[in-house]
Every structure is written in C-alpha cells, then in structure tokens.
Amino acid sequence: MKYTELIIKAKRNSSEIVQAVLLEAGFDSMQIDDPLDAVDIAEHRDVYKYDYINEEISRAAEEAGSADDTITATLYFTDDEEGQSRLTEAVSLLSGMDGVSLVTEETGDDSEWLYKWQEHFRPTKVGERIVVKPGWEDYEPAEGELVIEMDPGMAFGSGLHETTSMCIKALEKDLGDGSERSYDPSRYPIKVLDVGTGTGILAMAAVLLGADEALGIDIDDEAVRVAGENIAKNGLEGRISIRHGNLMDGIDYRPDIIVANLMADLVIMLSPAAASQLAPGGIYITSGILDIKEESVKKAIEDAGFDIIEVLADGEWRAITASRR
Image 1 (cartoon, one colour):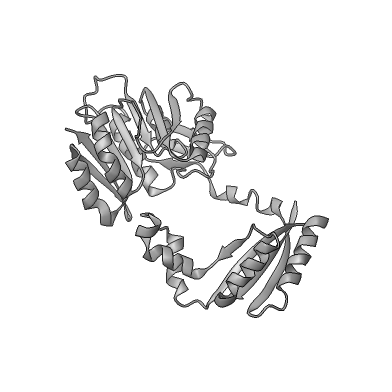
Image 2 (spheres, one colour):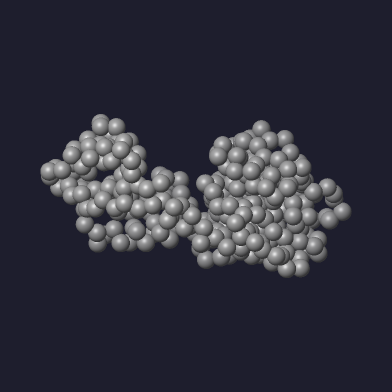
C-alpha cells in the first residue's frame, strides 16, 4: 500500500498548540521527535527506571545541546480517497500557524521498507554453540552448533544484545558439556527458571544446551505471547512452559539454575527470592547490569546467600554467575 508522509516542524513554544489542534481534529496517531527528550532520559535514569540507555539515545542527548528548539511531528496517510482527504484537512488546519512549517509530503510504497529491516538480521553465533537465525534465512549448522529460529519482534531479546549473549555464554559454561558445571552434575533432571523471559531465548538456549526443562516468566503479556510462539516454532513446547508473572511472585518452582536478564535494581530485588528457591550449589545467572552498578549488585547477591563464581564483561555491561551457598 502507498502512503503519504506529512512532516511538520514547529518551534517549541508552538508545538503543544499544534498537537492540541491535531488531537482535537482526531489525528491521534503521530510521531513526535523532540531532541530534549533524549537529554531528559539520559539525565534522569532513576525517574524513568532505566539502566539501559542505548547508544542512539546517548548520541541524541549529546547532539541536543547544539540543536535548535524545533520539534518535529510526523503523520502518515494512506494513498486513497479517505487518506488524502484527511491529509488535506491536516494541511488546512496547520497552514499559516505561527512558528509552524510543513516541510514535505512524500509519497512512498510501504513494500519498499516493510521488509527492508530484514536485511539487518542474519544468522548470528552467540557464544560457542548457539546460533540465532531468522525464519527467512537458511542456515546449515556446523558440528556442535545449536540453532534457535527466531524472528525479531516486539519483545526484547534477540540474542544480539550484550546482556543476552553473556547469559548464553554463562549457560554454556554450566550446561555445555557438563565439564565446567559448578554444581553437582549428578542432580537430574536439570530445571531452569528464566525470569523476565522476553522472547524466550534464554529458556530455549538452556534446553538446547542440556537442561531437561525450563520455565519462563514475564510480566508483559506480549512477551508471553511471543515467547510461546518462538518455543512452538522451535519444537520445544514439551520442555518449556511460559507464565505471566512479576519476577518470582507466587512461583512454586524448584530450579537448578535461575537466569535473569533484567536490570540492576530488579536483580537486587530478585536475589533473596532466588536464594530461597535454589538448593545449595544451585546457579544464579544475572545480567542487564551496568558497570557502575556491578559492586552494589554483587553485594546484594552475596548478602542473599550466594558466592560469586564469575563476572563476564562486554563493554559497559556485566553478567554475574553465582552459586547458592
């Protein structure tokens, strides 16, 4: 389908009026780009509850200081009679407003970009054995490789982010061939609890690496749906189950390994509950931890009853593996 893109530029002191006019007229789907949003997020991580400020946001925050006070709003209209009528209405409403300019109206075909993003996703080896591949790519695994098929979706965790890959590397050390497992390998079956499962990738990796079963928990309904679809796509329904839940609240499950790719504050919050669920020698793998919070997270994990085994580092991110005393 073709569409028309209307880009509106407004001075900061006019932008709220522009938005109000559009909303009043029923234009309730628009993209707003304000350079100062990036600054606000970067400077108030505690307010937004973000440990993770990605490079794009950081770069935008740095550039915002030299930017002017222009805010950009973008609306999209279908290239049919109804869509073009609405476009004409929007242009009419905004034309002549002080501090407002209609930069361009571009017509394109969404078939040109709808699948364009697929070019950026190729089979990717994560760790020593796990390979993540999208469904549209053919891949012949090398000896010893384990393939997870997963199309990038709305839920976080494609395996490409450092925090996810470090969790997989930690799981490989504990499950890969048993030689590096730091708890008693005679304790079977091996059960894994994946807290904040997202796409289910860590639960799937754990089972492929040798765990007998896994349970994934996520507070987000969309993540629960996506994880379930990914597990079915990989034929692992009989060994992995997914539940909706807030961390480990109300979860009666006795795992041998808990893996939690969350954020530092959530890892700290989770650690006492993780200790209560794991038997002595059980493994606790955590990530989503910025380097500046490494020491506080390690202390919380140790205070909960764990001994730190290893800390993996990738850029500013850390993953911590610990053993229940």
